[in-house]
Structure formats: structure tokens, C-alpha cells
Amino acid sequence: MFEELKKEIERAHTVIIHRHTHPDGDAMGSQIGLAGIIRENYPEKKVYTVGDEAGRYAFMDGAVMDTVGDDAYDGALAVVLDCASKALVSDKRFALAARTARVDHHIYCETFTDLEIVDTSFESCCGMIAAFAKECGFSLSSGTATAIFTGMVTDSGRFRYDSTGARTFALASFLMEAGVDTAALYRNLYAEELESVKRRASFICKITRYKDSAVSYIYNTAEEVASSGMDVFSVSRGMVNVMSDIRGIDIWVNFTEAEGKVLCELRSSVYNINPVAVKYGGGGHKKASGASVADRETAMMMLEDLRRLTEEENA
Image 1: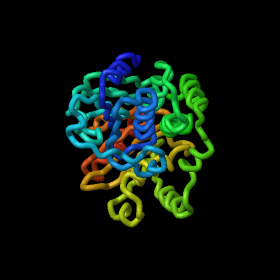
Image 2: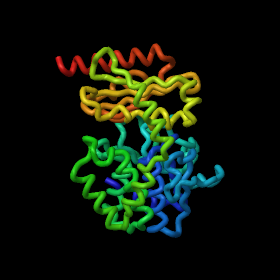
Image 3: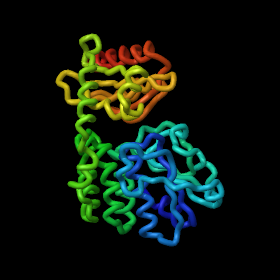
């Protein structure tokens, strides 16, 4: 699967690695991991990582992005990771590169690079980067392996989501053989300050069941976000799964007002909610998608569509 990507890397003197905006563990892990693979196996090449700040993943070694000028893209290869659409790429200058490539596991939306490697069967983009390293026989430092492992853990929901399979664990084992310290990693990923636990509890208290259906939601106003002391994406994406694992709730949505729109994070343990996200201009995975809508009224329309989805599936 990865022969062409390896050839592109070998031909390039400079490789600049991009990923989606407001990165999660998979975006950061795949970006840092691929950079590490290239640096460790092709030390003569220039490798840069670019994009917005790492947020809660700033603890990862390599999370500080490089500052590069436009001239760095002359003759370079730009690789975009964990990103389904051009609009979501952090730093649009990837298009300035002589050659472009994409590695992604999201449901296909559009083609926007020269080389496209998209495989939705992987639980994470990091899983694809691990497979790339294994398939090509690359050596991995413990730091590089840990970055990739981080994305596999976070995007698989701690190896619980449906996309987790035998291949996932085989690749995780491959990474752990390179020296991943899971105890240290999990302390960074899951340990919380007391105030953070209290904030999470406040979101749990806001959970609302929609029309006595299998759909639940939280609606966060702009005022509530401001008073929470959290950034908007920590509220939107960070709090959506406080609604997971509730008996009788199969779909849950976190709505968050931000900059004149409403961010929508959709999740399900049972149903393919991606078509609903796509209907409202978003996308993602079958059971984890996102979108942005204009206002609260439209958000409630989305909830009604999700309720109808559960009824149609059970008819």
C-alpha cells in the first residue's frame, strides 16, 4: 500500500508534514511519528512539521511546530495526515509543494493531493503510519513509536471502538517493541486536575435526552463556554464523550456555540451517523463525525434527523 509514499519520500530533499486544524491525538501522533520515521531512516533529508498549536497534546515530544518560509516548499514533498478535506488542513501552503501526498482513514470526501492513500478500515491515521513503518522495515525510536501509539490509543477509544481489530493490536505490539512506556503515556493522557474533574461533572449535569429517544445532547452557549475557562474545542470535542456508555443512549451530540456558528460533535455506539453529519456540511467516520451549523434551531433539526435515524433502523 505504501510503496509510492516511500518513493516520494526518497525522491524529496525536503518533506513538510501537515495535518488537520485543532489537532487530536491521532493528528499529532501521525505527524510527529512520520517526521520521526523520516529523520531516523533518512537523516540527510530536511523534515518540518507545521500547523496550529497542539493544545492538550502539547506534552508530546515534537509537539512544537516548525516555522518555515514559503521558499521551503520549493521542490519539497508536502504530506497531509488525518484530514479528509482541503478546508481542514492546518496551513494551506501544502499546495505550494512540488509534490503532495495524503494519508488518511476518514470517509472519502475529495481528492486534493497528488498521491492519495485513504483506507477507512484503519482505526486511526497512526495505525496507517505504523503499518507504513512495519511494511517498509523502518527502524523506530521509542519517542517516535510512542507518538504513533498515542494516536492509536486515542482514536480507537482505548482500543474499544468497532474499528479496532487484530491488525490494531498487531501494530500496537510492533510499536511497543520499540520501547513505548504506556504508564508514562497514560498519565499524560488521562490524569486530570481536580478542577478539570469538577468541570466535566458540570457538563454531565447538562445531558438532555431528546424526546425520550435513544439520542442525547448537550448544548453549550457562547456565554457558558466563556465562563467555563476552557477553549471552545476543549468544550466541543473534549466533552462529547461524557455522554458515552449511558444505557439506552445510542447517539449523542455535543453542540457548542463559537464565532457565530454551532459546532456539532456527533457520536454513536450503534448507528452510522455520518450521513446526517454530511447533510449538514460535515463528515468524518460512521460513528464519529462533526459538522458546523448556523444556529440552535438548525442544531435541533439535526437532533430530529438523528432521532428519525434510530426509528428507521429499528422499524
